[in-house]
Amino acid sequence: MAAVVLLVGLPGAGKSTLSRQLVAALGSTYEVHYICFDEAFLEQRATGEVDVGEFQPQQWKDAVAAIYCRVDAALAGAAARGVGQKEKLQAFLLDDNMYYRSMRKKYWQLCRQRFGQIYVNTARGICRARNSQRPNPVPEAVIMRMEALLQPPHPSLHSWEARFIEVDLSLHSSASLRNAPALAAATALIRDALAHPVVATTAESCIKEKQEESRASNAASVVHRADLALRQLVGHLLRDTRKSGRVSIAELARRLSATKDAALQRYREEPVQATGEDAVDAIVADFLTVAFVDSVLCDVPLSVSTMELQHLVDLATGHVLRFRLQIANGSSVEVTVGQSATMATLLQSIRRELTAAPKSLSWKSVFIGYQLHCNGHPFVFDKKPCALATSDLVRVGSVNELVFVRHTKRRRSKRKRD
Image (cartoon, rainbow, N blue to C red; front, side):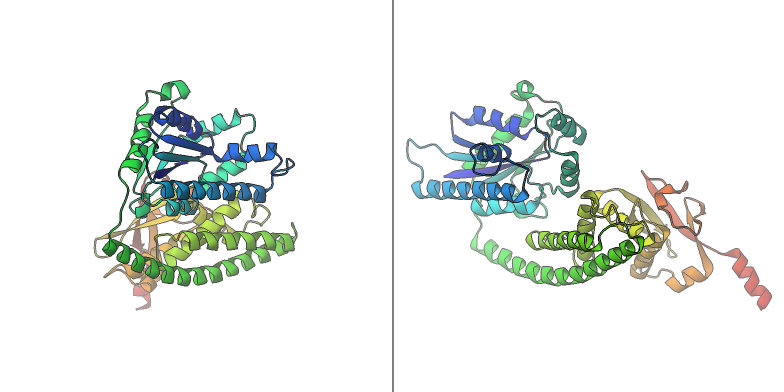
């Protein structure tokens, strides 16, 4: 019998250091197979299995596929042999960034009963500093992309991720890690995975199958709507760029189309937990996050619409502004937008909340007779669109209080007409 344990985290987080300590700590009891994806790829390059020239993404994909097949075959062999009196239990430690959940789920599907994850959540600055000191550092742009797209284990939303721990190796070196709680916790997780396999009952399996069918139906509808939204968005971006004449429209169209297809495929492999329009927004935000981080949109001229695009990226990456809107019945609603959002986006979000709130003001009456105040002051901008975060009234780190105040001038003018 064998277990599969993944080490997840950014380059420089300390995954390899922790893995080697685990091999030393568990090697006398179990047969531990440590597979570092980076080292396996470099070995293939050294032996001539892949070209030694410029890095090619397809070569990396081929190397990752080879590791998957290797682990699959080893697990099948272990299952066929069973456990003899003199044969040790096996543990496979797989060391890679694995920032997408879908990258990890395929290994869970190989070893559902004895699967675990160790999320090495070391401070971003320390990861970058360690990476810069390596002989072959990962490019800064690649790390930024991984940071934006990293999907940590989330067992409350994905039950198959229930067996996991999170450790921070910011303060640990190889020597100090030997007696650290992080090593003890990681060792305990591996022992638990080997000693206590997860066994689903028949009833649980039926329920999960029905849930999967429902999610698949919902995902197909969401993908269709997201595809339409992204096609419209790509067309808009191309029109903006065509007017500027900065870059080749054909090349930009190719890159945007590839980014769009990748975003839809990621959702197919690992749907977000949101539904309806929220799920569509999440896919659009994923598309824009990758497009901005990969500099696909660096040559698209800034316009009102492209400023609003960055707002979605901010939402996806946690760079947000929070507002609390007081409504007519004395209650309040929460509104969250990205730091790059303009007043138009804020008003659109407010409209959505007012429409959903019971016994609230009608949207028509709001615009006819009320002015928006933020933190006790009239919330107005010049005609030129700008980000809300640039306003002196807006507090980035705390909740901003919003309220609609009736226009006194309009009321007096109405009396005069009467």
